[in-house]
Image (spheres, rainbow, N blue to C red):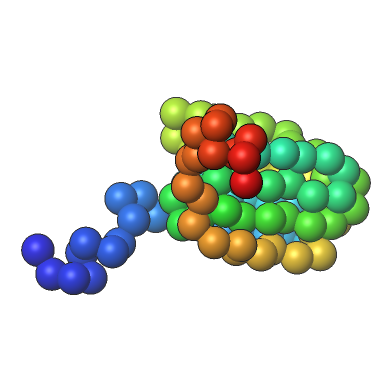
Amino acid sequence: MTNDEKTTPSREQNIILQNAKRLSLSGVKEVLSFDEQAVSLDTDLGRLEVRGQSLKIDSFNTATGDMLIFGTVYALVYTGVTQKQSFVKRLFR
């Protein structure tokens, strides 16, 4: 196994933004938080923040990791790799 194969995520992630109004994502593991201005996701490539206006999660298939978001999308920002922390570690940060 080469170094590239070791660092490559087990699943691919695709992002399709159509007319800044319809966002289709794959590789989503979990929805961390959401409201009309931001959706925070744990993905195969790390934490992804979707920022915009009137954002609504239309569908999320937890088995396949596919998600569809409607609304006006202003920004997609990867904020780093998400690492699960225990409750105690989060409590005493």
